[in-house]
Amino acid sequence: MEHANAIAAALFSALVVLAGAAYALLYALAQVRRSAGWRLGSWAAYGLLVIFVIALVQRLELRGGWLLIAAAMLLGYGLAPLVIWRLSVGTHAEQ
Image (cartoon, rainbow, N blue to C red):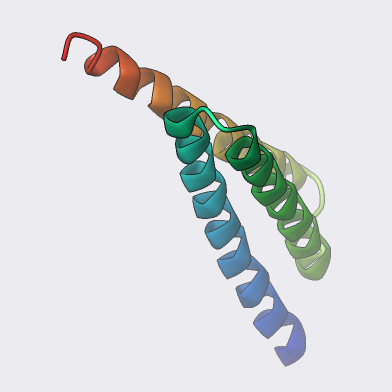
């Protein structure tokens, strides 16, 4: 991998993490405030996450099983906030 590709891959990797964090935060805000605006923001952040993962896959020229790992990562990032929210609500329902 050439130097420019390595730097771009590192940048896209960081953007994947940041977009995933933004998605989780905005999803939680949408749930707490019951706001369509925050929900739209969470979907926009997830959309950016998908774009960054695709860019990372292309930059690293991933093939085969690595594409399955990238898809699993997207699925995990997508489902984690929903599952964590339900777990949190269930845990604190009696309070």
